[in-house]
Image (cartoon, rainbow, N blue to C red):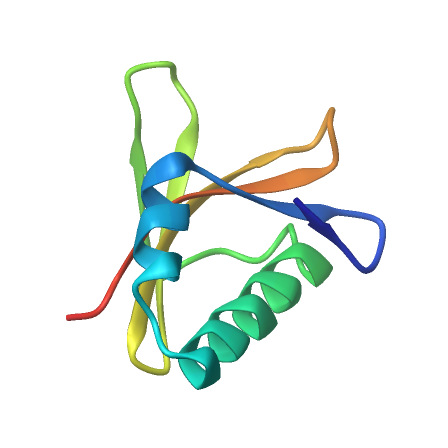
Length: 86
């Protein structure tokens, strides 16, 4: 979990696995994007879907990455569920 403001970013196991496969420079970029998402938890992604638990999953293309995440306002966390490179 990373925290720089009111909300923190949280990475799922799948997101951590993807992150671990990146170069140091790309890891830095992913962490910067995660910090930006946490700084703006009310922003909408490029499209939305709903997972099996009923969470609204935001999906956004940023630079060379596609992030899927949902916001847990009670915990003040942006929960990044998946990161991929198209």
